Length: 379
Image (cartoon, rainbow, N blue to C red; front, side, top):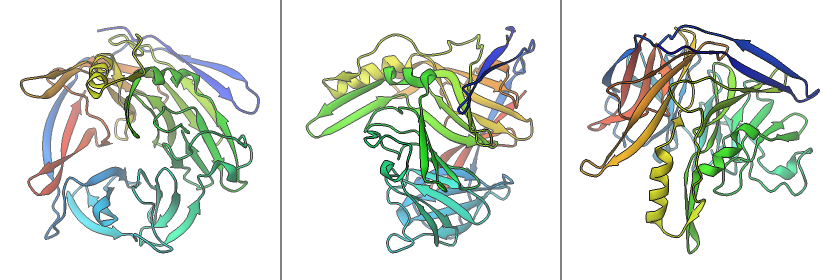
């Protein structure tokens, strides 16, 4: 069992630039006796017929008993009862007219019992689950005082709205590039501020671009912005460091972790642009051999955060499947590292699902029905 040392969290206050240190240590590994099991559960959709693999984005209800997922072919949000594992409602939205939701939806957020937040790279708004638009939200930099008149970045990347609907957070970027920082839009005062995220700037070193004619393909790591357990988290697959934005104090906290089993971040230098798609894939394969971190998940029952990691990701040419060394990390409610382990018999890193009752749910399809692969973690 490895000894887990303290971490230092740097708190930066926007208003006073005051810096505070907070440290805590742990001498036990919560995951010392870790095991897991895997199951597949099918969603009962009744007589409904639709493409079961067309779900995008999963948002839990406040009590965690339902999950809302976007079904793009029909501009619908499907509500699934997780206790009965059954489709219980199809919330329909309009493709045009005054209540039209953003086309090619990239972001969805469950706000409360009656409202959802939708956004793409150009449009955002709050909508009733019955389909009516509550309000539109501008993503034009020129509409917000406080940003440079020549602000060069798009505000339509990784968008979240605060629970009180007074602020929008985004990770502005330039075309296919990584995020340049954090933008905080005040929807009442119509002003904004743009903050750099120096600990995550290295993310851009682990992307590779291939241009051909008028098109381009960019692959690699990205910064992520998401909210779990009431916390706004900004992180990157390329490093274990994260930022936490506190809505009440309007402050940003950098948290670093003393991981012992894996490197804290990717290293080495890789070409940022290549001259063929084959070369792009080669570079990506090399990048993926280094450590990658998943987003955080919150386990309400155990009152812990957890995330996954992977290294040595390689393609098996015979089976055409990727495999990797996979890791699990746990943290207490204050983001102190409490456990880390290599996960035996799991050769890939589950990502982009949702956590509930000590289980991680990942989207799947069984026959003509939507389904979930469910990982149960025991420790």
